[in-house]
Length: 384
Image (cartoon, rainbow, N blue to C red; front, side):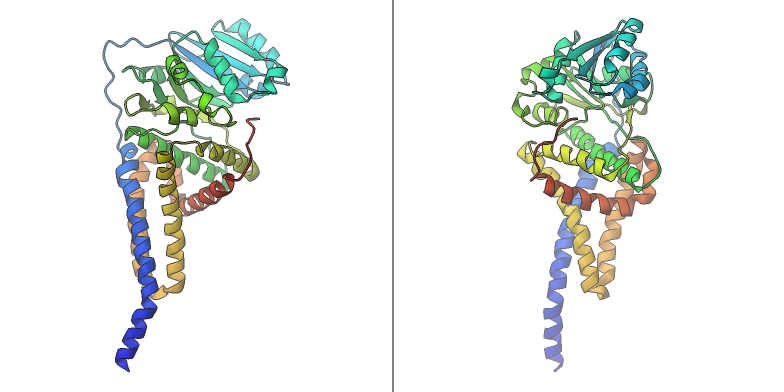
């Protein structure tokens, strides 16, 4: 009878140890990303500036459609950057508000502001990539910096830092653009998602495998744009003027990061969940055109974390007597997360989110995986 019970116990415990083995494999994958990818940003130190390198003149390109309020508030702070030689190219993409008249007024005050107007019939045929292309063609300088109308630099040294990142002949500069802090869970989620995305693309750039950047704070050269035929390979996709361009043109040797706090560019976050979902759906639609190796890399990271949470909860629900094994794996991952996330959050100015980490991390992976799945079957999304 005792032998029979031992066999029965082994049979009933076999599914648990199978689940435990899968959770262990998922944990190993997660530890790889934490220790061998994200740690690169956590412990990153800016290299010494190269001597006798002349700071290049810059063309700042901003595309705007019906952004009068944001331009009135933010554009002067860009025009007042403390940099020796730069121009601002403002592409007015058929705005129907008072943007045109505001720009006429600003042009009388700032000689380095230049406006490119897009007429109505052109706007009906093209999206933001066409506007960006016109801005690049109008730029008189080789080194380009991009931001959006709703963005504002943290300091008047933004362009100084972006220009210094070009000092070794680099062609792509990946900056960082956080969202402003506001009350509520949605704002915390948006800032955590932005932090996590930045931690990922900046770490992979340091690893020599850059796969994206954000157009709110991005730099690259005019010659690279035309050598890579601009957005021709993905012009049919409404979004992706930033991440798809970087994904297509970045190499291990032509891309660097610029994350000094004075070079951060802040933006206002979405205030409703529906607007946030629409924004993330638009971003997900562009990621489908990433290089296959990058899609596999990102899918492995996201899905392994999502399944780790799901299977851990299932194991605890079905086999509560072994709670200490699941808890041990969870705590191991959590404490390594803390060791990596704390210095990274300080660099990216979201240190206060560390107290939300366990909840935000689980919610983030669940939401991103589910939203990404449904985004694969949605039609194209307009810029504005």
